[in-house]
Image (cartoon, rainbow, N blue to C red; front, top):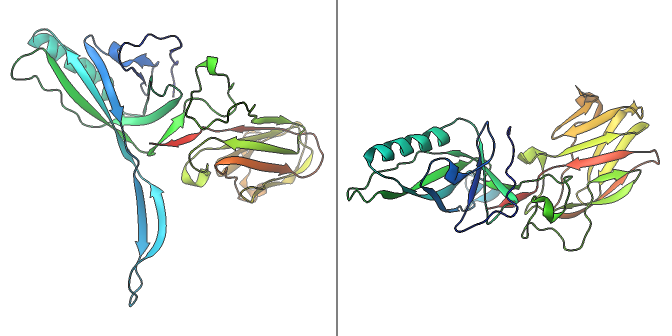
Length: 291
């Protein structure tokens, strides 16, 4: 998403805060959308859909698969306004901000290191009959992935003063996590997600390799997933496994990459690179959390 992120370190909170990054724009405090607007809270629940199959002539059903489904994040707001003309203007400013096509990125001060990528659903702001000059309303945000994501990526600097990480992200205490390795042929990757990172399930993973000479072969011994680049490499070449595809120096090269990909199990993943050539490898992905 384009635009800059807010620096919310040291932000003063007198009530809950919501920070929103529109499809094309900088992240802002929600109360900047219009004067008199206050964020009350947001909430969501996970959706799991399970499919069963039925065999003719056989009692019961057989489990087929389960999938995380789209869910709704409900945001509650309070709006204070003056006269009817002020109400109409503020209502228009709220609609103008939220009725954009594309994904919004939202995060609250309760989870500053975790974001949701959403679209605003239909909502109503109704002038109360008692003309009390305030109204509460809800915005149902559609969350197509059904999950939450870490604000930062695995290979971003993991220090809490960078305002990227928080307690409750499954990060092991006192462990110096690494996602970039130089000339190491056996190493461990920590997946802090609540679930497995699997590109086939739309959880992106990018693995970049440079400096290697010859055939590249690496296995995740935890999951058994192995990726091979069969064509000979020169140290100046850059190979990138980007989800289900592999690229050599920016050009699609699936015919040389054996049409396989790597998954990351929840927790520790033990990797081995075969051979003893020099190598520079980096893992770039977001951690995934259940609502």
